[in-house]
Each structure stands twice: as C-alpha cells, then as structure tokens.
Length: 184
Length: 184
Image 1: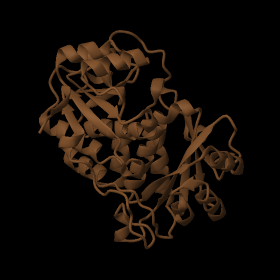
Image 2 (image 1 turned 30 degrees about the vertical axis):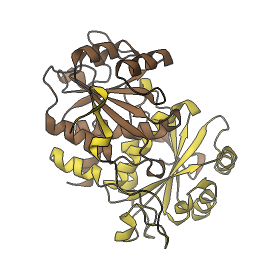
Image 3 (image 1 turned 90 degrees about the vertical axis):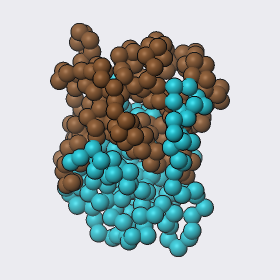
C-alpha cells in the first residue's frame, strides 16, 4: 500500500446522502467500529460511546430531529456519537472523521446529521434512553451509495444543492511561517 | 488496497511525541495538506486555514504556549489550525484527524498540542500575525518517529506516562438500538 494510494483513498471520500437499500455487512460494521475505537482523544480520555441503529422506525424518527437530517430515514444504518460532555466537540470531530473513513474503506458512504436544536437532541436522547448528562449532537448515516450520482456532494433526491462544491485551492488554505505568507 | 489493509493502517496510528531530526519531505507535506484540504465540513463552509511552521525559533516559542506542548519544540514541523470561529470545534477535529492520517500515510508521526488558556492562544496568534477574530487553539507537530519506542503513546523523553494506554473494549464502547444494549 503506497503513501499515494492512501492519500488518494482519503481524498476521494465524499458525503453520501442517498443509499442503496442493501444492509451494511457485518465485516464493514466491525471495521467502522474498530477504526472509531482507536481514535485518539485529549489525554486518551476516550470521552465517547457509540450507538448503532438499524431499526427503520428509529432512523425515521431521528431524521426528523435534525437539520439536513433527512438522509437518516433513507439509510440502512446510523451511528450516534454519545459524548461525555459538551466540552468534547473537537474529539467528537476526530471520531466522526475516522468512522466515516472506516466505512469508506469498504465502499460504504456516510453523511453527518446534527441533532439540533437542543430540544431535538433531548428528544433523540429520550428515544434512545441515553442518560441526560451526555451530549448526543451527531448522527452519522451509513450505506452503499445509491448510484454514481450519489457520490456527488450536491446530490440529494431530485434537488440541486446550493452548497459550494469542491474545496478551496491550496494557496487560499495554507500560510507559511506567518499568516499572509502563502506557499505556492 | 483491501478494506482490511486500510483499516489496519488507520488503526495503527498513534501519537508520536519524539521525532527524528530529519525534515518532513515535500511530497509528504503535499500529501498532508491535500488530505486536509478535502476534509468535509458543515455545509462545506471549510471554516479553516492552515499555517505551516518549520522555523525552529517559532516552534520553540509555540511549545511554551500550550498544555503538553513541549513536543512542538522537538518537531521538524507543525501545522496550526486557524478556524473562523470558536463554533467550529467539531470541524476542526475532523480536519486534525485527517492531517494526522495524511502524515501517517508517509510514516510521519504527529501529536496535537492545545494552545491554551486563551492568553497563550492570543500570544501565539500575535507571534504568527493571525487576525484576532480567528480561533487558533490547535497545533499539530509532525515528524518521523525518533525510534520504535516513540510509537508508544506513553513515550515521552525519559518519563513514564500516567495516561491510560490502549482503548476501551468494543463492548464498553458500542450500544445497539438503545443505550444499555450491548452488541457482543
């Protein structure tokens, strides 16, 4: 496995919002959880638990408790990030990224939904019997992409996205030694 | 490249705090930045810029502006995450994880330092001429591991870590369908 292949693999990941109906197989689930399990965290506190949801009724209910969360209803599976406190957002971002890359290693796409505002988060926690003192802000849907178009970030059932596509060029992103000094 | 190889690659990453003196080569730097550049973010806002630091005097100064930040002084290179606001912590965690994995693809280790408390962050921003309205909480050191022992999370120059090693077992980490229902 060359460095370039690994970079290409990570570079190629896109959010997927439309999924094929077939379930995510056990080996892919195990891979996703294992990659997540080995995420680093501040002082290795691992301030998290995961909740795996495959019941369609639950996914349906969760899809109504977030912003841009509709994709949860159409996913064969979701993983919820249960954090020890609201102070762990940076670590929860690290965890989310790894879970998504873990899925992508199996060709399984994913998309983040925010359980938001707080009232929605509280309702989701109640539904899933999550203790009140935890934060559960993030749900990630997983599934095989419905089709090739589903690999485009803008793809959502029948409507065109208004979100900007692609990424900023390196020269707008990176400064060298001091802010304002660009590298390229 | 099999799914299992990719999972193994991600699973194998550990924080590295002691680095060999040789510089991080240009192709690895490009890989790190490219993996970072393609990080997903809320609504694809890409609320970040990166600052690449290799000047030893700057790394030395930064190493005094954080908690557990000493490793910056001994690294050949660091990348600072400049975020648009303090509301982007989740996205900054996603970005950090990818930058680290990007390095790891080249065998380059890394470790996160927090520029903290706020007074230290402000000082670091001033040093690097970063606009006052940005958040710059996270610096990541990069370099080849000094030796095999440097790949152990506990490894720091001559002292034993008091941090817990390893990770929680899957059964403590993952719930199924409802909180409290374990999978294995």
